[in-house]
Image (cartoon, rainbow, N blue to C red; front, side, top):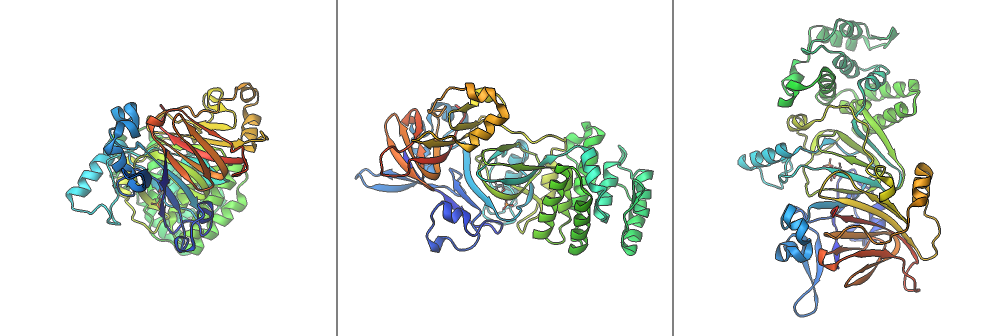
Length: 494
Ligand SMILES: O=P(O)(O)OC[C@H]1O[C@](O)(CO)[C@@H](O)[C@@H]1O
């Protein structure tokens, strides 16, 4: 196995101390916000491996170079056969101090088409206005390393309408109208009245006089054709519910800048009227977003999405096309080997609404927790396995302890799944044999393969090639390092 050095990403929404502390970075590398640490074979930002040189010293080799040089040794037969001589996943530790963009990852053919189109237009790969950095669709999963907040996928139309009905803001009213629009994209008679009077369910919305008149006048003669022309080709077979969601989302992300204080006041007032736990959470996330990005009406889109609050060890899988926004927290993130992000708002980076809308999945759906399916097979002693339905990646989050004291993360799972967890027998070997990356997130752990042993301290990581054979992560039992530790291990699901 080889030491792997992560690539730091200093995005504005990152933390000023969390990742710096986790990775024990020297002061000169700790300046400014640090958002992500990439363990990566992506050619745009490749990690370096410490490998032995022919003279016996260690030398730095990039992950793609090492894999291309000896794919069978590094990623093995199966991975090479299926994905070629590449690392099929990208593994990151991510820390959001502030919300990051409202975004969608491209679906397969849009990623290929978009990449080729931007190449043909001569947009350089590192151009900040470029959307497609590679040809891959990007499925993604995050496992919380501490409480982690996110908005993921669309909630039902009912939930969205209940939330938006509490918001006294013209864009929210327009979104409400979209959720009640006809198949042809007309504003329904009821909605026209609501928008002209500011009355929702008989309750006055007290729109500011000028706004009410302007907005009412515009809405009365308006329809949603400007949204409909941006629907993807597949929308010809969409049911009305999906078209309405598309139009409402479109209304939020294309509203342009709005008065920051009016938007915040409207959201605060809505929060005051919110009752259900999820509803309160949705408002809290929208308020965080509207505070971090003053005057960005796309914060209202979070009111039509599922608010998720993960505890340590909880996870969510985000398939391509799913709208999402991470709000706060630190997590381990793994995805297809892709850096394709299509942003709608809540960002200082490049937005690409046209391509985002082509990929947008408008079907309401509950967030997918990849750890709660086939739980009996996936929970092993002090390790939780997260395996979504993709071929490129899976994650293990585990803890080692020479004294065998109970692990709170598994305890929490045990409460949730009760008997099943208690029946599961201990099996400390990680389940798969492809290319693996193990990172120690706390204390110390000992990685043991069929041909190598390595102790990792917090923030250290190794790349375990396929040729190393089975891998187990054990506690350190002598006094050379902490006897407890936790780790995250990325691998292919085979
Ligand atoms: O480009 P932004 O808006 O900073 O967000 C980028 C990040 O968002 C994510 O796609 C999370 O969904 C990360 O994988 C990615 O690095």
